[in-house]
Image (cartoon, one colour):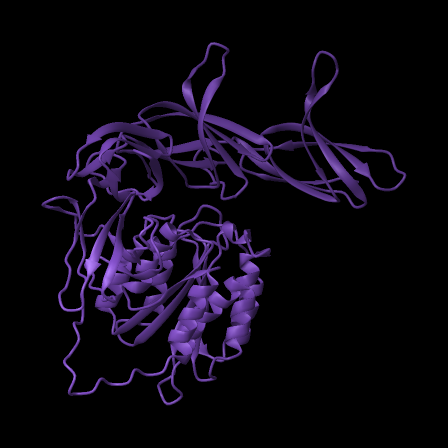
Length: 546
C-alpha cells in the first residue's frame, strides 16, 4: 500500500488548493511504457496508478480543471507516442478514470517531451500551470529532465511539476527528481512509506510556523554551502547536474539519518554537529566528513577526481544530431547506455570506452581520461540513409500497407551463396541508417517478393524503389473453410508449387503476376474445388469460386 499512498500524496499536493483560490489547472501524465506491468507489493504498477487516480479524482473540487496525458501506450519503440487523452476541463474525473482503465502499456519513455507538451497545453507562459508526472522509468528518448525543469520555471508564469517514481533506485530517482525540484515541485518515491508520511504531514497537516519574537536576533539562514569540482580548480561544466546531500555522522562510517539534499548550486541549513556530505554527479559518488556550527556557514569543496563527457552523435560530418543514435559509455566500474543523440556524463578518471550505434552503423573509441579533463566533441558514426518504398509496377501505384516487410542484406555473398542480413523494417517510407557500401533491399508483400540492389554514401539519402511486378487477388467462395493457392505450371513430377494459403470464405493477397490455381476447401460435405485465374501486375483480380 506504500506505493498507492505515495501516488495519493503527490496528487493531493498538486490538486489541493484553498477553497477561495482560483480553479486549479492540472495535467496528470501517466507512464504507459511496458515496464508498468512490473509489480510493487504484489500488485502491477499500472493497477496502482489506476486505483490512485480513481481515489484522488473523487476528492477534486468540481471547479478544478484536470487533464490526462499518457505516453508509450500506442506504439512500441516510438519516442513520439504522446497523447493528451483528456484536455484540462472541469468535471473530467469520470473521463480520466475511463481513459486510464483502457490504457495499454507497451512503449518507450519520452517523459521530457510529454511534460513540455503538457505545459504548452496549459499555456504555462500565460497562466498558472501544474503537471503531475507518474513514471516507473527514466528518460529513453534523449530528453534532459533537469534542463527542462529549469527552462519551464524560467519561461512560465507560475509553472510547477511534481514527479512520483515507481520502484526507482535512489540514483534513478535523482535523475528525475530534478525535474520537480527545478520548478519548486516535489518528488516522492513510491514504496518509501516513511518518506510518504513526512510528505503528507508537510503538505496536508503541518501548521504555519510561529513568528520568532522580534527581540531575538535573526538566526543564520544557511550554514552549509557545499560545492563539488572535477578536481581542484576545475568546475563541473554548466548543465551537468551535481546532487549534494548530507547525513548525520554516526561515527561508524556508514552515515546516519538523511538530513537535506539539493542540486548544485545549493544552500542548506542543519543543526550544529558532524555530518557526511555526499556529492553525486553522473557515474561518480564521493563522500567526506564535515562539521557545522550555528554562527558560520561552512563551504566545503568535494573533489570528484573525475572527467566530464559532452558528446554529440551525428550520422555524418556537419549533419544534425540524431536522437536515434545510442551512446554507450563504459567507464571504470560501470556502464551508461541510456543516452540517445547526446550524452552529458561525469565519469571517474581512467580508461573509458565510448561506442555510438545508429542503425547498421557503429563507431567506437577508447579514451584515457585524467581528473579535470573535459571532452566536448562530436562523434560521427559515418552512415547514410536509405528510404524504401515498393510499387506494384514500375512507375505505378505505391504499396501503402503495414504488411510490407523489408530486409537489408550486404550485396556481397558469403562462400555458401547467402547474404548477411544487416537490418529490417516494416511499412512504406521505411528508413535505414547504413554504413557506406553496396546492399540488396529485399521486400515481401504477402505472397509477393522482390529485390533491389542499392548503394549508400555517407551523409546522403538513397531512395530505394522496389518493383514487385504484382497484383492483388481477391477470392470469394460461400461456404468455404479455406484456400490454397498454387502456381498453375506443374514441375516434371506433375506437382504444383504452393504459394500461400488462407482461411474463411474470402481471402485477399498480393501475388506476383502470373497464372495460378486456387484449391478451395468447403465446410460441408463437398469436394474441393479448383479454380484457375491470372494475376496481372498493377491490377486487382476478383475470383469467384462457384
